[in-house]
Image (cartoon, rainbow, N blue to C red; front, top):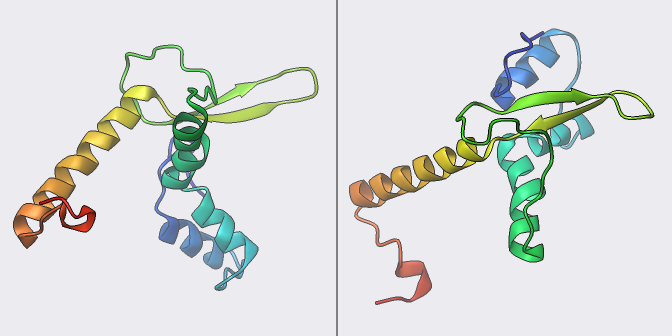
Length: 124
């Protein structure tokens, strides 16, 4: 369906591929819910953000051999006693780059739309 190096496939593309293979992916279906819940944004929110914000701990959800290298997320396969385990690794530099891009895009949006980003917080 997809090449093994495609890790950031748009959800609509995944759904189109599933439907082309004869799999029904209707509104409210468990499969559609899984496709949406396993997007990078949801994984980062669930696996990283909640641990950092609510538990004040860094969640190590994988093996990141070169933390200073900026590379896309990847899968790491380990074989503990009990079988093969595949973990999604989201490198720290990737997260930082994504955060910086989001801030830059939000700043551009606010400038173009003449929006005050602090208006919702009641800050003069």
